[in-house]
Image (cartoon, rainbow over all chains, first blue to last red; front, side):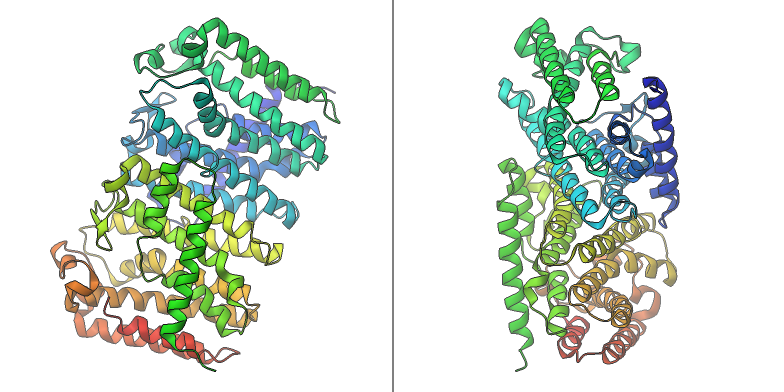
Length: 294
Length: 294
């Protein structure tokens, strides 16, 4: 029986949130640090990255629980990156998802350490997960470093900083978003496929799928900054223009950006249709990302 | 033939420094990030943590090269922790080993990211090291998270911050140094023993040995802050007293601290003498730590 997308998303979210909180609660560490980590982990969000891990297991008809530890790990990495990005020396943001940012509540030093802690512990979730074979766990850790480290997310963040208040080429913009956003989404998808014992051919197709999905995700973000509703996206409309940020619409016009979004989604779906399994759930997630209003 | 300690230290240092730099050079990441990481990695230091990994392999008559990747990983973790500790929101230090700190040269945002990058990549060095078996690599990664994460170094750093400008009990001081310093030294020793296929009995003894060595290391630090020579330790004498920091001498008097140092070194050596192998090199390293003047 086909599962409704919204049910799958809700159930996955619930499982992931319970598992993350209970993992952090179980750690033997000063309460203040635990509180700071839990504050950001429990601040909500779409949980897209961990849901993708479970969606891959679902697609290959495997028990979704096999992916819970890896799903929690990627959400912890995502959360650490938000805490560090919000710091005064980085984006200097006071609000995140409508709540005061971590350093506003716990101070800057604790925010740095909560981020360091979440990053480090994410590896523990994978390494100590007894379900996948040792070889699989090592492969997943290697993929995680590739996606989250200096050849992935951290590198993209540096490129983003270097490009601030400069006029970027489409190629430079692409580099930033591929590294800052698409690679970690790619980790979710590839690690889910590895855990699901997907054929190697499928895994490579899914890696390219993730690239298109990630860029589409970012283009939609840029479009929402122009055409979105403030109450839905939770931040003021037009902030990119105000900050003179290079975006897909600023280079391609809004119509050009919409065309580019469509073409990435088309590529993504055609890759899904070439997999060895039916991928209705992933196709629905694609559509959701292309049309989301927050 | 017995090797001279100073030769062992010099040769190990050289190997580790070459391997670390060439690893970072090989990464596909923005040059500015690479420069920031290399700046701190190449700023010198005793390289005690990585040398201990190699010293364990030497002790068990194994090829020291087996430990190079793990040795580089622990030095990268140590270096990331120094970069983050020096940030204005943490200890706000302008100088480290006589050179401007990372954020003084590259700015705060880049220093945060260089630290994040070093921390993340350290796992790559271990996971992609083809020499140890998959099971050994997983065990070493698990030990690294335990030593460097919120149940180890990051937790110790938080306890240290919470204890600032407060009068601490000996127990609280012990918690801070056990977590902030001894656990990562413990990782070096235990991971070296795992790589060397040391008997499990020895590994547990070495874990306790590392605890005594780590505390002894810290007591010596506190004593040097009172009796050391500024030109040798590279920072002003008496800064702990000036900052009203709780130290071993402030709780125990200087003579009491020296006695405590001796008793930890005695325990450490007695554990070494109970191992299944002769451990002359480790005994010499113990003495070096107990009597070092910088």
